Length: 72
Image 1 (cartoon, one colour):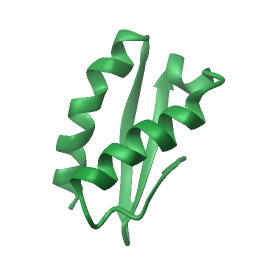
Image 2 (image 1 turned 60 degrees about the vertical axis):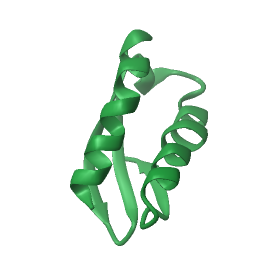
Image 3 (image 1 turned 60 degrees about the horizontal axis):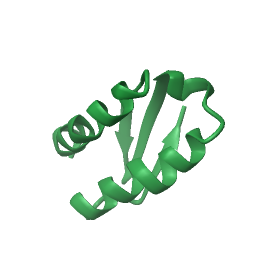
């Protein structure tokens, strides 16, 4: 499942990088994906929205086993 998550995140990264940020996969455990937002995304006031409505939504759509995405 980790490989599937990495492939899906690779599709999101260009949009985040265009705004000076990025996302890094930390761990995948029991359907919970742990990521670290870096660059501009780390201090962005709408980072939670990006995480839940962007990254989590996309991962859940593409990978049925994903239950939640959390920032660590």
